[in-house]
Image 1 (tube, rainbow, N blue to C red):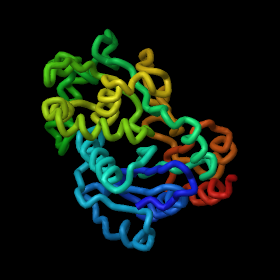
Image 2 (spheres, rainbow, N blue to C red; image 1 turned 60 degrees about the horizontal axis):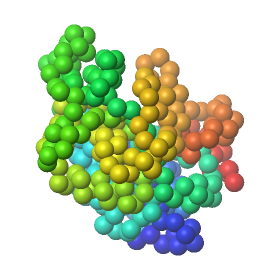
Image 3 (cartoon, helix red, strand yellow; image 1 turned 30 degrees about the vertical axis):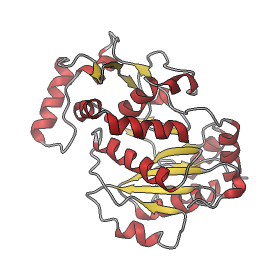
Length: 304
């Protein structure tokens, strides 16, 4: 249970991890100083090393139910839902923050706590509508029929052909339980209120047809949570007061998580990036790892 009572706000960090147990240890230890931490380890990975490093931390919890999380596939949706359910069945959190296993805070504990205190009712999730777009970059996300779960050569070939030929086999929206849902896309990272998180759990449990649609969507986790929130009453309380205009590239959808795109990959931050990260308005940044970022991490931990 959460014993960070002096914070006057109950915070949970939800982490999706698949590698680097040492880094996850540093991340969880840092976050557990002021929040509870829930961790999902990819089903394909041995979780024993992750658990061993954190066995004495009473603010860290691992999900018993685990899913295979292929890049871009719908397994990440199930894993994130499991994280939310684990957290909300433990404590009624005021704020749930989803991070990936290469994220790290770039602000002090005190700063992060106060930030969420001062923005108690804001849903930090961003997105734009893809359903009515005339740009293939956007309409492809809701009209292409994709295969990113359990990938193999044939599935990759089909996906490549679909992208190149722009074959649209889907309507671009979902009809379920008498309602039409337009599709929205945005950043995979989010920070939601407990009320919104509970809404998502309830929605997930009741909308099986809706959920099934995302098994052939790409990128599934960047679509699912944004679509649920932007089709809900919570859309008016998002950080940008609802859907935004179309902007290509995830770098234009940064929420509370800073990153830099290099050709073909996301930059791994090192000590050379300390002054840059310290000056950023975001609360977290990725990517970091133990091989390249330990000096940086130690300096970030000293921020007040």
